[in-house]
Image (cartoon, rainbow, N blue to C red; front, side, top):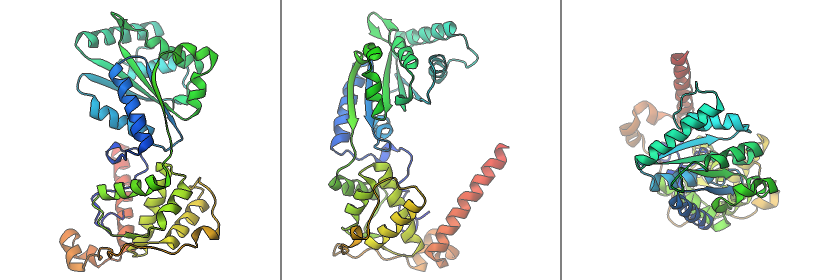
Length: 338
């Protein structure tokens, strides 16, 4: 909505995972190296844990896109406390086996035949299980049994487990010893440090063509870190709302007062789960770089891009128009589907 106000090529702070925006901070680079090692081993389990929003799904998406080729068939499964039989059905379905097959014995037979056929064709299978901390013990055991499908001692299915810190507790339970022994590599993805938070924000902005508009006070970055606790998804939420706020208010400088207003709004909406703030948090003065922010477009320049009517509209009106267009498109899509 605010992209055209600041001449961005795309939305820089989407909340959904997008590995095209990945920023390789220290913990990310380490976790990625561990997962790359596991991927090249092509066997057993690999496990990555972290708080919600720290970038686990983004990391694996980045890894698979960079390393996988047409010989790798990947299935993605989001676990929602599935029992063993339901999990097996979901795995089979995600690998292309008809959902009409309901008997467990037939499912296993069809899946085994499929994996062996792929192996003969020089292909391999990778299963990615997200939110794996919600797996039941029986479901985890079912996954372990799937890694028993082998050809000449080589497992035909590799499984990546992604989950919150509770996943580590699950695999360390005594009854999970056989699963634990098959984990080729494991890593914990930590939140960003303060300096990494600033670098992360700048990285995502630069990916969409940011050239200083809006200008951002240096005092803003520590505040975003403090209230996001370095969690990328929270950083994205705060930054996205900040940019929308500035677009609506026709502001081309982001300062401490803007952060205070946005944080107050988010916490009032129960969307900001980070620490609470006090007035003292916002006492520091704004510090902007010497270079001025890029000037807003003239009506002539805006007219060249979007037409005279758009150029004449205020930023707030432009954002409102974008929102209305998105809503209309959504309603049109629903009408077509009904």
